[in-house]
Structure formats: structure tokens, C-alpha cells
Image 1: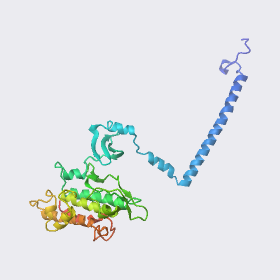
Image 2 (image 1 turned 180 degrees about the vertical axis):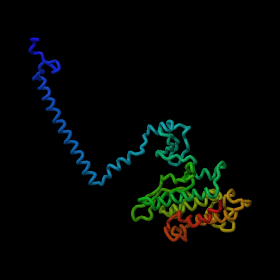
Image 3 (image 1 turned 135 degrees about the horizontal axis):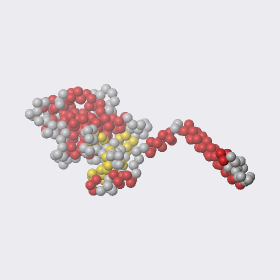
Image 4 (image 1 turned 60 degrees about the horizontal axis):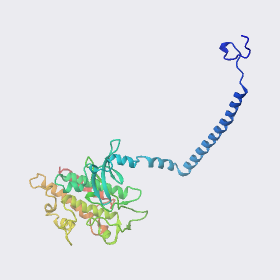
Length: 335
């Protein structure tokens, strides 16, 4: 009572308090700061959106998509160190010509193989291991299946990529097997890309002796036919279980000549003895099947590159996988 300056909320039945000049001044300053900042922010956002829209329109949205693809699946060096236990000896798988290989497990449980590159881990090792270790064995159909996988991989490299890829170093140690024994072609360290309208090119990088085509060894000339030649040699090796650079092959006597001279009567003398056993009820069928495979191998490894591949093919003359097609039905009943 009798306090005329008392003011406050209406519920107290007193007059409302007037806004002080000081408070009004502060609010005015705040508004003077906030509105220009908001206006500037809106302008910046608008300009940024306009720039992005114009860039995407000009380049067909490629930059945004490429950026997303580039960041997918990236693995940091720290993650690799953790996965391999700091590249410990217990994680060491082996060494190759281009460095050591370590096995690792990422945080999400994915098993990887690390060789500078991070690769999918192949638990069954290489075809070379299965051919020459006494602890492993591949029957006829397993070997055939693996080589069909390799043929399909070559088919993709030669005809399925935007630019044809020449592997240049096909051999059993570069064929890896996953948990289901599906073969993968690996190690593209010296592979070559064919440019548009190119059918061959010269290189000073040489692959493994005994697997390389004659023109590759003589002139450094590589083409898709060089892979076909290497494939043919590897196909012979897979079914004879004899390395093309074995010490028994010297001078003019080679794995190819040995196989060629054995067809068709003495095929059992060159084929892996574990595949063709006289007491087997299907011995003759298996012998005929392997003979057909080795004929394909000889066609692939013809000295003249123009004679390589299936001579009876009616389409895709360079198709390696097509060579097998005419023999598959014949071989199915072998098992």
C-alpha cells in the first residue's frame, strides 16, 4: 500500500512494470546484430546451393557420386596395424616378389590379407599349394572347376572391362581359392591395359619364365593372346602335376612337347597318376576327358598367336572360357 512504484505480474494486482530504457537499448542492439548475421547466413547458403547445383548440372552429378564411392570401404593404416597385431610374425602368411603378406581381422570380423593393398583373405591358399603339397588333393572335376573359374576371370578381364586387361603373369601361385574352392585370379603387379584401338603393346617387364608366350619373351610384345598361352601352360600343369620349368624340361624338350607327344595313346604317362587309376570303373571315360582338356591346353599354347584358342569355335574366337564349353557335357558323367 502507498507504494506507487511497485510493479510486477498482473496476478499480484499491481501495474505492469515499464520496459526500461537500458533494457530496450540492449534488445535493439541484439536485433541489430542478429538480423544482419541471419541475412548473411541465408545469402551464403543460397550461393553454396546454387554453386553445387550448377556444378552437378555441368558434370552430371559425377563429383558427388565419385566422392561417395571413393570413401566407401576405406581402411585406415591404424586399423590395419590393429588387425595384423602390428604385423606380428603370428599373422605372417608368406612373402611374394612384391612384398610380405599378413593375415588380419578387422573390427567387424572381416578377415583380410594385407600386401600394401588390402585384399579378401583366401583361406584355401593357392592352386600351387594344392597341386604340389602331399597334404592336399584335387580330383579331376575340382581341377576342371578351378580352371573354368580362371577362364571366366580371363573372359572378364579381356572382354568385360571398360579397357581390356592383360594379366601377363598367369601361373598356379597367382590362382587363389576361397572357402568354397572357387578360384580367383590375383597379383596384377605387372598387368597391362590396352588402349582404344590397341591389340598389343611392348613392355620391358617380363613375367615368369616358362609361362610366357614366345612373342612376349622375344620382343616384349604382349596381347590378350599372351594370357591365353599362359593359361594353356597352366592347364597342362594342373592335370599333369608337372611344373613347366622343372629340371626335366631342357632345351627343345618342354612340358608342351611332352604332352603333345603323348596324345592320344600315351596320355596316362603324362597325367597325374592320382587322377587315372586302372582299377577305376570309369578309367576310360576319365582318360578321354583329360585328353580333351589337354587338347584345349595345346590349342591355347600354340606357338603362333593367331592359332591360339579353340580352332573349332564359331564365335568369340578369343574366348578362353568358350573352349571348355564343348567338353563340359562330355565330362559331367565322369563323376
